[in-house]
View 1 (cartoon, one colour):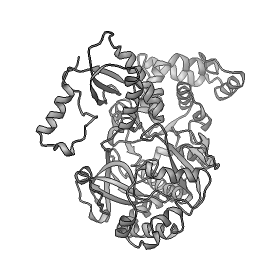
View 2 (view 1 turned 30 degrees about the horizontal axis):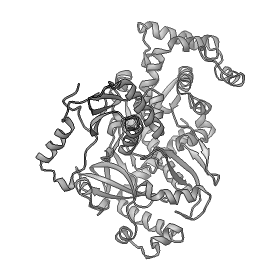
View 3 (view 1 turned 180 degrees about the vertical axis):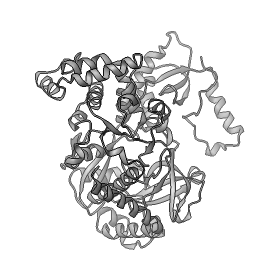
View 4 (view 1 turned 90 degrees about the horizontal axis):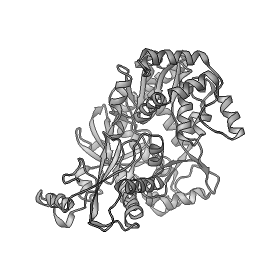
Length: 541
C-alpha cells in the first residue's frame, strides 16, 4: 500500500477513537441535525419534526416501525418523488431479503455513503496498523452485483458492495484479484469457477467476504473441479461449458491460457496428495475479513482449518440499513459503536419480548446486557426495527462495545439468508397445504442445522392411503423458500446452504413441547408458539 494512503487511513482510525470520548454528544448532534434537515419532508411533516428537540420528544412523536411501515414511503421514492423521507436525494437502493416474497429496498443517500466510507476507511486503518503487509499484494473480495435493475423513477437498485467495488479508484481496482465483470455473471457455478481462476493467478495477501462459508465453498469447489480449472489454465476458455458465440468470446478473453499458473496449481495438488493446500499456494496471505458473530460465524471453524494461523478480522456489525460498529482487534466480533453514523436506541430483550417499546440511549446501557436495537440513519429510516439482538460487552470511554448475537425471535440467519418465519409459513402453504399433505398437527418445528448447513423441518404426518415422499416434499419446500427469499436462493445456488430436509414426528410430539412451556411457567394468554428450535425434537421417525 502507498505509504501516504496508509497514513491517511491510520489517521482516520485515530480520529474515530478520539470521537469515542464524545459519543453521547455525537448522538445528540446526529439526531438533532437529522431532524432539523428533514422537517420539511413528507415524513417529517406527518410526524411533527418541528416539535422535536430531543430524544424524549423523538420517541414520543415517531413510532418504532419495521420495513413494512416504511415500504409505502420507499415506494414513493422509487417512483421518483423527492423530499419524502429525507431532503437529500436518494441515489441508490440496497436490495436485500424481506419477511415475505418481496425483497427490501433500502434507500441510500450521499451522506450515508460518506459516513459509511469513513467508517470503512477507519476499519482499514486499524487493519493495516496491525497487519502492515495485508494490502501489499492482491486482494480477493467478493461483492454482490452492483445493479440489478432501475426503479420506475430511475434509481439504481442492487448491491452497495458491488457498486463500491466497481467504482473504486483505479489504484485500488488494480489490487483486486477478480475483475468486476465476473460478478455480473448470474450462473453461480460459472461465477465461482471464474473467481477461483483469477484468484489462482494472483499473489494474495488479503481475503474479504462477509460469510466465511463463501471461502469454504470456493476451496471445496476447487477440490471438486480441479481438472476443469487446470484444463482452463492450460488451454484457455472454460471447458465443459457451452456458450453463445458472444459469451464464448467474452469467456475466452477473460480466460486466456496461463500454463505457468497451471503448473504451479498441479504441483500444489500433487504435493498435498491430491488435495489443494491453500496456504502453500497463497503463502502471502496476512489476514482474512469475515463476519465472526451470530449464526453467520458457523463456518468459521472450517475456515480456520483451511487457513490455520491466519488472523481473522470481523467486518463489523452492519446490514443493508446501516453500518454500526468497527472491530479493532482480531478474532472477535466485538466492535465500537459508530456514533457518528446513526442514532441508536435499545430495548432490553426481556422487556421487548414482554411487549415494551420503551427505549434507552447509549448513556443508559449496561455491560453484559442483551438489547433489541432500533436505528435511525441518514437515509430516512427513523426508529427502524432492524430485528437484531446485540450484547454490550463493555465500553471504550463513552462508546459502547457491542457484538451481534442473533436476529430476533422470528428470524434465522446461518449464512446471511435472514429467513423470516413468515417465509416458512408461506412455503408451507405452497408446498404442504396446497398439496393436501395430511398432518396431525398444523404446527411444525424448524431446526437450523449448523452442522449439516441446512434447515431441518419436523412435521407430524397423519396416516394416509398414499404415503408421503419426504424427499419430494422437501424439494418442493426448498424451491418455495428460494422463490420467497432472494438471499436464501443465493446461498442455496452457491452451495453455502444445503437443501431443506423434512422429518416425521411421533403423534403428540409438538403438543408435548408446548405443554413443557406451560409447565415451565409460560402463561397461556401470553404464549406464542415457537417455530424455531435450538435442538432436534425427540420422537423422530
